[in-house]
Every structure is written in C-alpha cells, then in structure tokens.
Image (cartoon, rainbow, N blue to C red):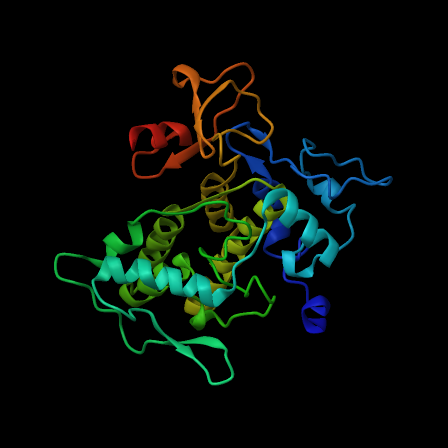
Length: 318
C-alpha cells in the first residue's frame, strides 16, 4: 500500500488528465458540471456540499490524495460510504470471472481471453490466452467491438477498464487487463493494420461501453481511468501519444457514456420527481414525464447519432 500512496493512481495535474479536465467534468444532461453528490469534501476551507458542481478550481484546492480511488481513502470514510451508499468495490478476479461468463455466452465457449487459476496459497489469478482470438461462424469481430455493455453503479468502472485492482490498488499490466473495454481493445489490435482503421475502431469500442454512478468523485475517477487507458493503448500499439484533437474526441465519448445518475430514478442526483413505486427497485415517472424540476439523464446512441433519456430505454424494454 505504501508504494500506491507514493505513486498515486489518479493524477489530476498531469497529462493526459490536465489537458481535458474541464471536459471530463461536464454533465451532458444538465449542460453544467457534475456535482459532488456527497458531503465528504465539505470543510471549513472548502464549501463543497452535495449539490456543489465540481470544477477544476475546486479540485486543485483539495489535498492531492482527496480525489483518489476508494482503496486510498481512510478506513473511516470507506466505512461511511459503504453504510450510506452501499459503496463496495469488486476485486479484479471477480470482475474477470463475471466478464468471462459474459464472453462465454457471446462466443459459445470458455476461456476466450484468459483462463482462471486458483493457486495453492488461495490467490485467484488468470493466464492470458495465446494467439489471435477466433470468432464463431456468422459473428465478425466488428460485431463484438460494437456490442453494447453497461456497468451499473460503476464506481471507478473496474468492469469496464482494469488499470488497477480496485480492491488493492495494485496496477495491472496492460496485456493482462480484463475489463470489457480492455477485451475490445485486444480485438481491435488483432484485427486492424493501419493507424486510421485502428483509431476508428478504438473510438467505436469506447462508444460501446456505458456506466453510471451517483457520487461525483467516483464518476470522475471512472472517466479518468478510461481516458488513461486510451493513452496506454495508443502508446503500446503506435508508440505515440494522442493529439489534442484525438484526446478531446475520446473525452467527449467518455463523458457521454459514463454519466452521473441516481440509478433508482434515472434522474440527475437530487433532482425532484413524483413517483409511483411498485416495489423497492421500481420507480416510474408519472405519465412518463418529468415532474417539477426533475431532470431525466440523457445518453448517446452513437450509431443513430442521437441522444435519448435512460428512462425511455428502460420503458421500451419492459
């Protein structure tokens, strides 16, 4: 843990985050900034309440370890957030197991990207499969890259990208990462030959993964994890860093796809609404419309080039 503390996982004032930080703080639904949605940062020095918008000026007024993954927060704060928001972060091996199960369903076979191994000392590890990933008949690699995936209450997005183990803070080498987007990037790397084609399908891979989160600091960390992963994959494949235009384009995709939302209502956190509640987990907007100052969260369909409310998608799937 000491090594992690000495080499923080999230660095706001360094490339690539500093270059697009203001964009990463945007809320596409409200056209303002995301909010803290927690009182954890409220102090005598900083008036940052639950509904305070997060700005770069506020962030740089915080201690350098304040906006960091859960593993670096104090035990007291971790316990408080677990109690109030049921905030628990999943070890990488469990993320891998669940993502493996999804891929087993999609490919129709086991151990597509890696094979899980339980060691004699009780550790859960995985061994990456060798060679090019083979696709089933009638399923092309482009279909896998475009297949939509959603991580609900995503926290730091460990199921989407696995820069580090969310439970320990230990970094995971690039070619051993097990997130949904990491798998898609392996497919892109194996099936594209020139830079332009690689970049096209990399953008499409990012456009295909979604996640929502209530608390603003977790959301920002999730967005940063995707952004840094983009840079990691470009540097590994092409030995260069993204241009400012490329960085801004992927940041725009990330901000649309990883958004702030109350998962029970489909609204911006603390947005008011009238509800009819059929059960503990079933909130319905009356007449399908927002009530009062309710703000339904919007997400982007990149293939149709249009946005829609998250609630409208839920209603259409019932």
